[in-house]
Length: 97
Image (cartoon, rainbow, N blue to C red; front, top):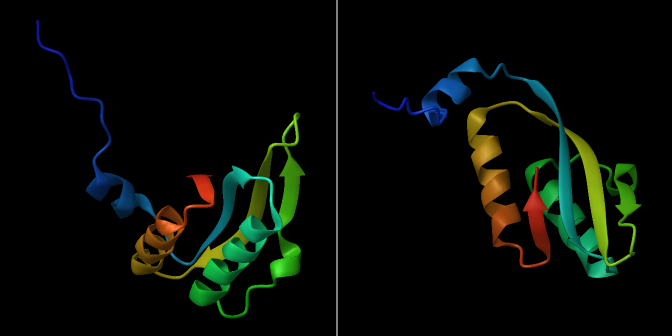
C-alpha cells in the first residue's frame, strides 16, 4: 500500500487565488508598543493607504502576547510574497496567519 502525499502544492493554491483579494491578516508577537509600530510600518510599506488605527489588538489571556488583526487588499500574487517576506524578517512577529 502506498501513502498519498497530501501536502498542498504551492502552485495549486496560488492558482485558486482570485485578485483583488480582501484578506484578514493576523500577527502574533510579544506584547509591546514596538510590535504595533513594526506591523504598521510593514503594512504601510506594502499598502501606502493603510490606516494603522484600523488594527485590532487582542491581548492573550496572560497579557504576554498580542494578536494584531488587519484587513488588507492584495491586488497581485507578488504582493503576498513580498509582505510575508517582510513579516518573517521582523523579529518581533512570532506568527503570521
